[in-house]
Length: 172
Image 1 (spheres, rainbow, N blue to C red):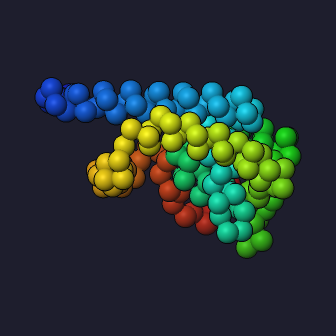
Image 2: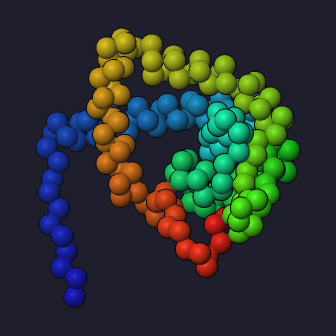
């Protein structure tokens, strides 16, 4: 029989910080998603995929690395990649060094769409998140959140955990 773990209550300062972070995150994500839908007919994760590919030196990544970087399940990423590929924004092919692994490439149409939606994306992020903060505030925010992100990445949800190498299993 499993013994329930005792849950420690959050103190008012911890609870306040948590709720402020969640509200800021929700408002920002909603505004970004509205912009991406209106200007590019893209979901947030589709934009993450295209922006990640566009920003890479080769314009390509393995599907598993892409799923890990956008913190999305591999099956969910496959569905999103299907939608992007149907629109001609990405292409997929077997990796030259391992046919079980899939490489995702951004197409010229994908690069053009990122270029088109990026200015509005930057405007939304700047207006909502960056304008109220000084450069010093941004340094502090980054210094505070980077170790939290790094800590979370040490024990990510299964869908965000880097895939263990298994020679018998496909890396898709």
